[in-house]
Length: 379
Image (tube, rainbow, N blue to C red; front, side):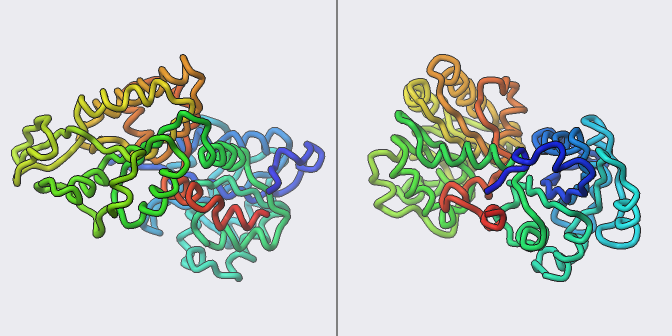
C-alpha cells in the first residue's frame, strides 16, 4: 500500500486529487456538527495535499439517510481551513467547480450516497467519480470495510494512495494484532454472534480479554445469572470462551430500575425490573492491576450506556490506561465512536491515551482479518 506522502510536492502541484474522506459527523438538533473528531483527524491529509499545491476534491457520505447533506460539515471544516462546498457529486455543477479550481484549493462535494450507485459499487458511477481527478487518495478508514464505488471502484481507475490517517490507522492496528505483553483487550458493544470470532482471536493474542457493555449481559446469561430487562444478543458465548483462563467479565454491575434509580450489585442479584447499564467499582478494581502493568492496551467500547450518563467507570478505566501510558510507556489503541465520545464526556485528557482510531466496525474487522476491502483496493 503506497501512501500519499511518498509523492513529492512537484508530483502533487496542480494535480486534481479525489480524496475519499470519512466526514460522517454527528449533527445536533440545529443541524450543525456536534463533534469534529473525525474531521480533525482527517484534515491532516487535506492540509498536506493543499499545502503542496494539489487541487483537493473531497468526497464523503454522512448519516444513514441518503438525503442528508455534507453542507454542515463544510461549514465546520472552515475551522481548519478554507473549503468550498458544492451541492453536487458528478453533475455539471461539480464538474464546473473542479474545472476552475486553483492550486491548493479545497472543494467538498455533496453526500456521495445521494447517488444509489455508490452503495451498489456501480462501475459507471466509479468512472464518473474518477473522471473528476488525476489521482485518488483513500483517507476514510472508518468505512473501508464497505465495498462501495468510491472506495473499491475508483482505485481501479486512477493511481491510488492511502492518506495519512489510513496509513496511521493501519500501522497502529497492525501493532494491536501482535501486542507486546503484558497486554489487555477491552471489548464492549453488542451482538456477541458477530464478535465471537474476534474474541477467540484476541484470546490467542492477549494476556487478558475483558468483555463489557451489552456483551457482558450475554456472559451473565450464559452463566445462568438473571439479566432482567437488559439487552441480549441472539447468541450467547460458547463454553470454550467462558472457560478460557484469559477471559474476564464484570464482577459487579450498575443496575437501573424502570423508575430510573440505579444501584451497584452482584450479577446474581439482578432483579426482573433491572436493566444493566454499567459495571461497578469492584470490576474496575479487578482490572486495575492488569491495566497498570500493561505494555499494550486495546479498547473498543465503553463499559456503560454513556448516552444516559453512565460514564463514571469508563472514566476510571481511561485514567488507569493513561497512567499506564505515562508510567509504563504502554501502547494504547482506542476505537469506536462511542468509546471516544464517552472518554471526551468524562473529561479525561487524551494526551496519554495513545492512538484514537476513527474506526468502530472497521477497526474490529481489520483486527480480525488483517485488511479491509478498500485497503486491499489500494494494493
